[in-house]
Length: 120
Length: 148
Image (cartoon, rainbow over all chains, first blue to last red; front, side, top):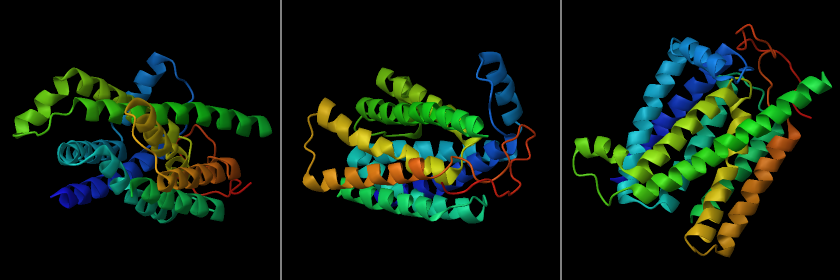
């Protein structure tokens, strides 16, 4: 059962975070952090289809995560969902067209091995 | 140009700190407030009003908003490894707050994560794809300094 939860969480998190990155990059850098300006930015973002899609996907991921936490420890739940790092870095390169240089690949690889070690 | 990249770097560090801390403590309070089981779909909603869970959820909302702000200028392939320092904080929280043991294997994992974070955050600018602009055309691929 817990592997079904993890499959749902990984798929929803990956889709949600890539859409979030795409939507936010399309919006452009947030420079004004005063409350009224943030409110205006949120009103604009609420109409961005990538941002809407990401919120839906991350809500799915959130409730699946709650389901997982009732049957598994945090020290299992957090690392087991770390496989999203691999998927998202690949998608960042090919879908978001980011320049993932060798330092970033190396860093992401170290993080993945590190997360695996912390969880075992 | 160098003051622009310095500005972006400082802003990135401040925002990434908020992202990491809100995530770590959000998850911690969620787990603390979670009942042993959620018997029916309604329980998934009512548990949100349990105080520790409510605090956790508030922090996770802050996490989501601060992460959105961070991603409005920084690459996903930069944000992912850099914010993974949260895993180290989770382990240290377990050690300090819950008195959990950190085995040598875990310490090795922590060292690898910290090395990965240092490599990405020290070795590349937060932003490679898209111009540093306000015009919302950030998707356009341009050759803004990758690497050091």
